[in-house]
Amino acid sequence: MQAFEAVQHYFNKGADELGLDASLRKLLVQPERELTVQIPLKRDDGTLETLIAYRVQHNSARGPYKGGLRYHHHVDLDEVRGLASLMTWKTAIVNLPYGGAKGGVTVNARDLSKEEKERVTRKFVDAICVVIGPDLDIPAPDMGTGHEEMAWFMNQYAKYHGFNPGVVTGKPVEHYGIPGREEATGRGVGLLTLKTLSRLGRKADGATVALQGFGNVGSHTAKFLTEAGCKIVAVSDHTGARRDPAGLDVMALWRHTGEASSFVNNFAGGEAIPAEELLELEVDVLIPAAVGGVIHSGNANRIKAPIVIEAANAPVEPEADELLYERGIVVLPDVLANAGGVTVSYFEWAQNRQFYRWTLDRVRGELDRTLTHAFDSIWDRAKERDRSLRTTAFTVGIERVAKATQLAGLG
Ligand SMILES: NC(=O)c1ccc[n+]([C@@H]2O[C@H](COP(=O)([O-])OP(=O)(O)OC[C@H]3O[C@@H](n4cnc5c(N)ncnc54)[C@H](O)[C@@H]3O)[C@@H](O)[C@H]2O)c1
Image (cartoon, rainbow, N blue to C red; front, side, top):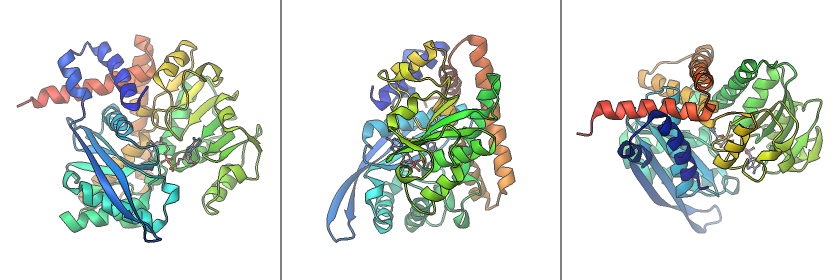
């Protein structure tokens, strides 16, 4: 199933719960605006390459559009559309005053030098700056982008519209960013993993975890869960996977992938395993934190973990989601599990608009409170109505967006 169709599938299940009529469904499903642009990239060797980039603004009923920028070679319009609509439901589910958007450039970020990345980012801003702004659409990091790209983004935007740090979130802390944004998505994933374990009567201490992806989200999730007493027994990235039933040395892996800029395949700890095997290990918790579509109808019946936490966006395909639900496997959906990033982005945006600084303690406290509230209400409602966490989360999000749409009128 294509990315946008998959989100529509989940949307329809939530809309069915609410008895939403067909005309309102159509309005809420269609993106409000889609932009496809070209990015001329002058390579370091002087050659010219033309890249394609997208910004999809899905819905703004509850506030300015909000969503990340992805630099990845698989990016296409359908994927960006799917991810943009996912953001609409995510911001509504955690009750942030935002709509949903997403952007992306079809390019392998690892093939670009730092200078080339900067040129791509600035050209992207040149192409989309008319539809971006602190009250209009606020990008953030996603796969292949981080705080450096956000700093270039803000700087380039200022050349058109003047200084305004609230145009983008995920900026460096020293440059109008907020402490705790870098760790926020992983911290949120970790926090909600602990809550899921606790609601299922399982102990965090000694719980075994397999983690796919060791980028921003995966590495911070691993650190948080290790500190909470969990054992990260397997980790993978795009180069390979390592396993140690006694628990991998997560901080050594941090140094290896961070300071040493290396990859999982040549990490000295544990033993190498085929990357696909990681998903099928007998562990307490499986956390896909890399790309979409990794759990599908072909491998869903081989998943042995009783808990799957969707740290990545859309890692479980809809057919697989049904199979896991039938087997009693608890899936914490992406729209809730990885909402920590956009939540702290909201704090950063609010801080920028007030020219005020938050402390790390305050950021963490408010993040924990926001996610706990969303998690508890969705968990309780799912149990009361005997629905999956995903369908319940979508129901809550759709209810809020539909209400805002109706209250504003169509005038
Ligand atoms: N960064 C955020 O704040 C944020 C917020 C919400 C959701 N997400 C989602 O989380 C996921 C990861 O984002 P990120 O920011 O950590 O990206 P990143 O670019 O920092 O890291 C991606 C990681 O995934 C690995 N990877 C890529 N392909 C793989 C494969 N086929 N198998 C195993 N590993 C693979 C990479 O090697 C890398 O370790 C994405 O789905 C993203 O949309 C990110």
